[in-house]
Image 1 (cartoon, rainbow, N blue to C red):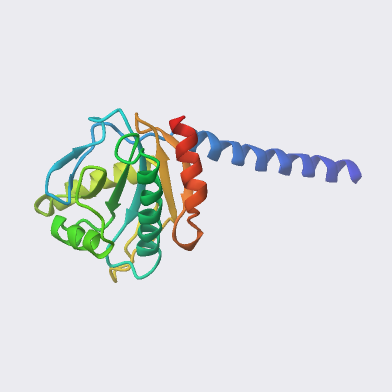
Image 2: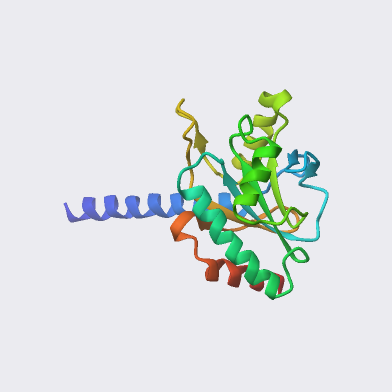
Length: 200
């Protein structure tokens, strides 16, 4: 009987270990496709494969979100200020905020969202959406990015999206480095330290 328990315990341990390893390997190999092009808050094209000189901190939001999205953006504003003081923001790293609700979150709406957080409208922090005139095609482009980083989301029909709660640091080639919790759990110091470690 003890032998059976031992075998079952070992099988369970190996199964859990394999599952954990799978998720680590999956994340380590995650990469945003370079051919994805979305439009930014200024209605200009942004292509993920164009600039291979900067790290990117990628945030997914929708502007009608009542809590976790604006909380994360606010914390990222504080992080940006720290990176500006260190002289690396816009030079070594840029922020990318992507809406998961491109139908409602037009470039004009994203600009208004930025203004609410006093975020300067420049290339160092891009707010991305899709062309409303080609909404189905643009939604698929956004899903290419969210899918690559394993960010899950769904609209249950009431416009209040259910979604994952992570932001993502990717390298100059859009390859996954690390993910961090959104909302109140977003640790500005931890993210800052990881960014500076990668820059060094």
